[in-house]
Length: 567
Image (cartoon, rainbow, N blue to C red):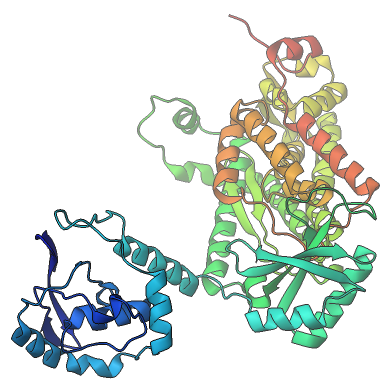
C-alpha cells in the first residue's frame, strides 16, 4: 500500500512491501541520487541515497525491458537534495533489503545513463504532487497479461525461425518475391506473405507446395489467397495473390470425438421419430377424433391415449422411409463427390423437424479443400442426389394419384398445401387438373408427400447463406464477398416470410445458430471454377427461389392452385 503526500521540497512515499517473504519499509525521505546531478555514468552512492531511489531506479531501468512486478517500476520524484533524512533507518532498511540483491541483475554503467535519459521523470512543483493517471501501469499490466493469456490459450503460431528459413529457401525471383509480411488466420496465428508473383499462379503455387513439403515436411499448410486491400489487379490478369502459412494442426479440423458420435446417433433417432410422426399426421382423415382434436384445437388440454396411434404406424412407415431415404441419398452424394478428391467429411448430424420430417443434416469438412472447384462439386453433389430421388418420388406419386386402382392408399391433404410452393403447386395443378385442385381437400398418394418434403428440405439447404450447401457453392463459385451479399438478401427474404412460408422463421433461426459461418478458404482460393459451374449454381439458386416462394391468394385463385376462401 502506498500514499503520495506533498511537502515544501520533497514528496513522501510510504511503501510496505514484501520482498521474497521479508518485509521492507522504505524511507520517508527519498534523496536525489548523486548521479542525477551532473554525471549520468557515475557509480551509485549508497551512503547518501535511499534504497528505493537507487535500486528502484536501477531496477526500473532494467525491468522496463523485462516487464516484471509493480515494485520494480517505482521511481523517486523528489527534486532537490535533502540531508535531513533518517540515515539510521535507511541503513537498517538497506540491510533488510540485501536478501533481494541476489536476484537483481546489475546494470552496466554505460547503459544506465542512456536509459535514464530516455526515461527521465518530469519535474513537478514542490507545492503540488505529481499527477497520477487513473489508467496507468496496473491497467497496462492487465492488458499485457491478457494478451499473454490469449497467446497461451490460442492456437500455436508459426515459428519465426521457420519464417526466416522459408523466406530464404522457398520464395525468390523465379516464383514469388516477398515484400511484406502480415498476420494470417482468424487470430493472427499464421503469416501472410505479400509481394509480386513471378509466373503463372497455379504453377507457382504447385512448385511452392512441393518445396515447402521438402523443406518442412508436414508441419505447415500453404494457402494461395487474394491479396487483401490490393490496389489493383495483377498485370498478368486476375486478382493479385499472396501466400498464407499456418501450422497443419491449427488449419486442419480435429478428429470426431466420441461425444460427437453419440450426439449424431441421438439426432438420427429423433429424425426417425419425426419422420414417422409426419407419416401419421398425413393420415389425419383416418385418425380418431379425440387425437385430431388434441392436435388441432388450441383449447384442448387433456392429451389422448397415444396407444390409439399404434395401428397407424404401419401405414406411416412408407412415408417415413421416403423422407429418410432422401436424406441418406443427400449424404451419399456428398461422400461420393469427396472420395475422389481425398476430402474427408464428418458424420452427418441430422436435424429433426415435425413438418418436413427433417431439415437435412450438418456435414463438416474434416480436411482442407484443395481448390474452389472441389468446394462447388462436393457442395452441389448432395443436394442434387437428394433432389433427384425427391423429384422421382414426387413424379411417381403424382401419377399414382391419377390411378383409381390405388385409391385405397390415398390420403387427404388440404388444398392450401399446394400454395406453399409456386413451382410444385404449378406442376401439381398441371397434372391433377383444375377440378381436383380447386377443392377444400385433395386426395394424393403418400409418395407425393415424401417427394414434396424432400424437395422442400433440399431447397432450404441450397439457400446461398452461411455454410449451407448453397452457401458453400456460391462462395466457391463467386467468392466470399458475393456470399455476404447473397446471405444478407436471403436473411431479409426469410425474415419477411417470402421464402418458405411458415417455415421461414424456424429455418432462419436454425441457420443463424448452427450454419451462419462461411466455409474456411481452400488451399488454392484464387483459381476460378469456370463458367459452366457458375451457370449451374445460378440455375440451382433460381430453382430454389421458385420452390420456396409461396403462392399468394390472388395468384392462387387465378391459377386454380387450391381453394381460396374469402370472408
